[in-house]
Length: 78
Image (cartoon, rainbow, N blue to C red):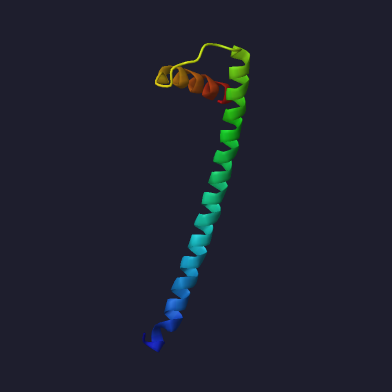
């Protein structure tokens, strides 16, 4: 590498490092928000299922029930 470009390369790498740090913090914040939202959904799901009481087992391939439950949970949150 040509020594006359080392300063320019260092500035470029510093800027890249700064941008990557900002991106990391942003993604970390977004992940935290999603984890909190997941926890809220799970609590609402538990409340919903507890309110339903014991019921017969739903076949695992019956996705329509799961979709209805998730839609109702989303309506509770929003």
